[in-house]
Length: 102
Image 1 (cartoon, rainbow, N blue to C red):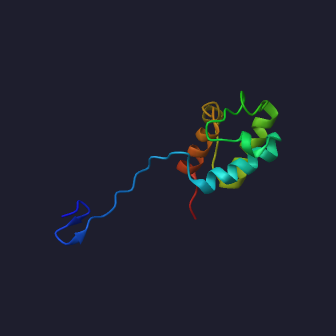
Image 2: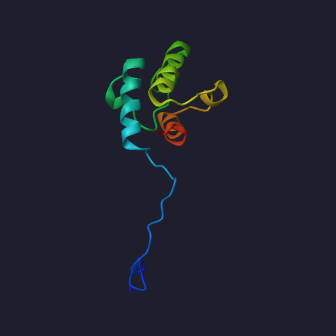
C-alpha cells in the first residue's frame, strides 16, 4: 500500500508555508517593479540579489520601491520592517506573508 493511500482513501496533502524562491507571480511582479524603480536589468534581479549592494538602491530609490510595494500589494511596511529587507527574497516573502486577500 502506498503511503498516500490509507485504507483505500487518498490521504490529504499537507500544505506548508515554507517558501523557496517565493511565489512566482509575486517574484515576477516585484522584479518588474524593481527594474522600473532601480533601473536595473532583468538578469540582475534574482531572489538572492541584495537591494543595496547588488542592485544599487539608494535611500530615495528604496523609499520609492517600498511605496510601490505598499501600493501594489496593499501591505504596510514600517521602518523596522523595511530595515530587515536585505534581498529581493526577503521582500517577496514579506509580501506573500502579509498580502491582503480580498
